Image (cartoon, rainbow, N blue to C red; front, side, top):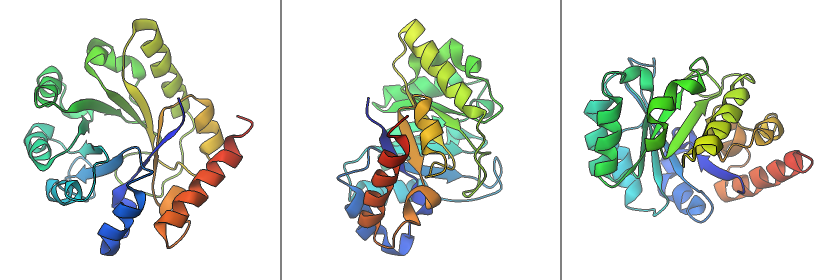
Length: 226
C-alpha cells in the first residue's frame, strides 16, 4: 500500500480555512481533526462545530482524534457533525470501550483507538477485531512541535504483525513529528498513514498546494532507498 497522508488541521492557517481545504481536497487521504478538552491534555483545539463546517466543503474522510476525558460526551456530537472516523484513547474509556466502539459503528462510522507512546500494542487485543484504525502517538499528546520518540516505531511493527497474524483489518497510523527528519525511519516501519502538521507540511510553503508538492517530493527523496 502506498503511503497515505492526513493533514492535521489544528496546524493549518484557520484564517484561510476554505482556501487551504480546497487546495488539499484532491490529495489528502483523510483530514485529521484534534479535539482536546483542556483536561486530558492541557490544550483546547478544534470542536464538533469545526467538523460541521469542514463537512460542507469536503468529501475527504474526516478523522477525529478525541483527546478528552469523557469521549462518550463528544462522540454523539462528532457523529452528528459528520465525522467519518472517530478515535479515542483507551485509558479514557476502559469501562466502556466496547460500548463506544459499537456506538460508532452502529452510526455507520469507522472507529479507532489512539495509543500513547507508553501504551503497549498488546493492550488492544481484546477488541482489535472491531477497529478500523489504530493510531500510534510518536510524541506525547496535546501539543504540536515535540521531539519524535523513535521507540514508538516498534509498536507500529507489532500492530502490523498482529493484524497479519489474526486477520484484523485496521489501518495503522502515526501521529507526531512526521517530517523530513523522520519520514525514512517511519516508512521503514510499514505504517499506512502519516499525519502531517506544521513541520511536515504547513511550514513548507505559504501556498498549501505548493507545500503539499514539496512534502511529497521530500518524502519520495527520503524514502527512495527505504
